Image (cartoon, rainbow over all chains, first blue to last red):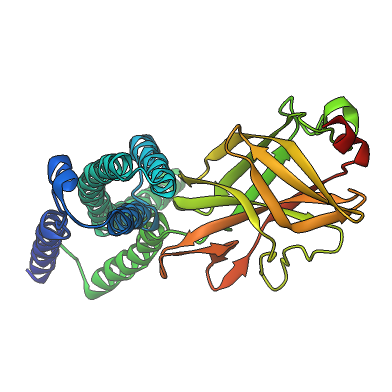
Length: 186
Length: 213
């Protein structure tokens, strides 16, 4: 009876763990901005401020990507397009800086807004990738940790059952020998 | 429902279960815990044929005026994470102090160009680095250079000169973005340590180059 209770509590704990993991993956980190290109172009903020803001956005994306590396949930093939986009943003930012240096404010504004738009798009994709990767990783972790008691239980059953069978088999062998000896004596 | 014939059998069952639970939990821990790996970068410079040769035109390190020198600079990221990398190009001579890898300090020479990119883990970024001497200015017996890099606007370097044009060096430094401070640092942070990578290539300029200009 007690064993039944232990097994039931195990299943409940596993189930609760799974629910917690799912809810964390869904509500964990979902804050990202959705500024758009047109707004950026009309925005009266200085070019330098826009460049700084874009650089910070690039750092934010990089942090999100590195969170995936830290958690070992990274999928190298899915990260490559995001890195390519970030590198395109960096190229655009460099162009914007050059235009600022040469005094072409309109061109600089265009380049910085393109860079910002691309970075924000990448940021959104990175957050989504992070969420789905975390969800998959947590599922995997739960499965691996959940398998430990199940595998232990199966191993125990096999070990105890196997031992019982072996003892029984040895006993039967000894009995057979004794019986055949007795018959021989008769 | 598990049936036990006696107390001994029950004890046996629990012991085996606990032992195998420890064993499988260890396996689960090993599988799910990220292991620390060695973190480093690889920085290299290749010659015009993308190999470790032919660094200078005509196989001599005396660079004539308006002659393009083609190199390839490469960086490989083994940091276990994506890295924002910047390669800073500086011009020095035999007396200027180079970067110091022990104290992890960059050289205080003027930066003539820089190249930045984001690199995923285990990725290599190789880019062409072509430069030529556009102009040589002479002051007593010191020569000053004006360089053009990758066809961009020429950069006049007034801070560094070389006596009779001997022993100029191009210093290539690796900088990375420190995500904690949001600033670029020379080298990189690995756990609590700081490391650095840099390389240099020497070249000479002769006064005959000025004549030819």
